[in-house]
Structure formats: C-alpha cells, structure tokens
Image (cartoon, rainbow, N blue to C red; front, side):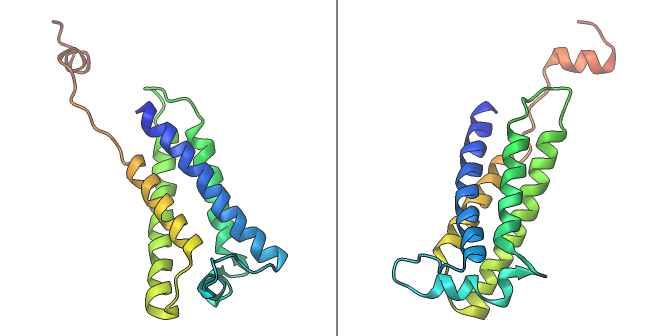
Length: 149
C-alpha cells in the first residue's frame, strides 16, 4: 500500500504541474504551448474550458492539491477517511476528465496534449486509489467474533 501512496503523490505533483500550467495560461493570456499545433489553444479557450466563470484547469489544480494533501496523511488502520476522500476525489476527477475528453473528440474535434496528460494522470490516480480488500486472517476473524484460538 505504501508503494501505491508514493505513486499517487508523484502523480499528484505531475497533475499540479499540468493543471498549474493550464491555469497560468488562462490568467496570463499566454497561449498554451502545443508543439506547433493549435488544438490545445482551441480546447482551452472553448466554452467547455470553464465551469461558470472558473477555468476547469483551476478546478483540476485544486483537486490535485487536495489529493496530494490527503496522500500525505500517514495511513492508519483505525482511520480510513483520507483514503476514502482521495478515492472520491479521484472518481469525480476521472468522470469529469473523461467527459471533457468526449467534448474534445466529439464536439471540438481537437486534442489538447496537456488535457490528455491530465486525463491519464487522474485515471492512474483513480486506479491506484481503488480500495484494496484483503483476506482476514484467522486471528482477525476470532477477534471480531469473540472466539479465542
């Protein structure tokens, strides 16, 4: 489980970089670097790049920061809420990102490499955040049922 947490922390930092860059681009007015293609700017300046007046990149930045903060809380067996919240944020994030990917493909007919990077990152975080069930040992079973070995 520690390995998963380390990967989630690393991916969160990557997501902060990607969404931070896209957020900076929104507020600075600078065009998004897209390796010579104009599709990134098309996607990031479309009406779908905003939720109300808030750029979706800012929402992504906040989500990645929250996922990072939750991942930095040391895990304990008697405290599951950080993992549950992290999973919930990742679930919401992955659903929203894949909706945005649909918009890129079906509506805008353009691909934003930065957006695809974020979609990949949040999908990996979601997969790594899936709950892990383990078989109970006989000692744990006895403990919960009150039987002694």
